[in-house]
Length: 512
Image (cartoon, rainbow, N blue to C red; front, side):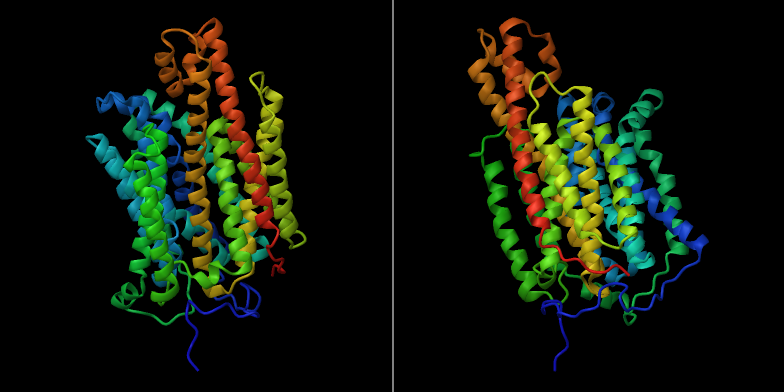
């Protein structure tokens, strides 16, 4: 009888993590503290890197003598997020092949090299290249950190530790703006990237010394390890994800029509590359980076779709409302979910409750008009959205880990982060695309005066200039923005409902 492969179906009675396996990676409390420090440092910096570009766009533009400052945040920020999204799922398999330490050191090395390139960048192109390389490492930092925690922490307490990591995510998002402003005002924008390098070196040293997780596999030579990497699947996945995100980014950022080849070309190409990736993973690769038999199982598929649609909604909200409200909610929600699951060892009802909370918040946000939101609306509508999203992330990660075998844990974590990061990037891109389309239509119908076309093009790219308008033009602009946002928020509500429906099939398994 032949041995099972990655493409074989999951056996119905496979052992979940922690159900019967012996803990061969028990560590002392001091060692665990050092490992947590090694994980927390890059997780915080990776979260901060995703949003710091918007704060630094003015000093970067002046330093590099750029005339298109308004596009810096889009290009520099999107390059990091695109790279993170594309390379995140690869680290699940890499951590199995090269070990947790090897995969984490690879991620930290790429992250550090990217930071150094940003510090020394003489041009916009060099800065974007640095951001891309940093994103290649940043995605790995998040994935391997979660895999490492799962190796060391009992699953019942895993949610609490995941919540603590999400506090760092929220802190990184929330502090990136004030910290970037302070550094650029008192020093130089390059320092905002450069101060991270010593911290990353420290994290790499701690990983080298303390992360010594033993995997139940036979030792392999470097050549054998490289031969096990799913190179063809990795390349097709990166190209497929990049193509679809680039197509939407061109449409939203460059104001190109859907008929423009730069928009529809990448989108059509992504269909072929996704089909190629599916074929490679299902029929060709012996150890696929995204095993279809795992992805198409009941709970992993439900978790993946829940994370995808939930991330689209959350980051669409994050893009359209102040960041610090969401940062606070993300921190509290993840810890709360971890604490609740720690007590009874149940997670299904936490998932459903969290998605229902996000749905409630989305419905509330969809009722906003030009007279809102008030301070009460921010706290009562936006905060619950962030709380629900954060609790969903923590509880669904526990759900997928509880329902798979130990040897599939790393790959399953990579799957979760692939759908999560793809949803995050598409949430921003699609909401901006929809918003601009509705806004343009409304402004053309409402804006009076011979200079209407100039005003329309101006306020579309700088909403702050609306306050300088007067009379009928002011009312036309305000009404147009309100209607465009209302359409976006209604779509968010529909996606929130889909998120909750996707979560219903998730299985409940006992947490050891």
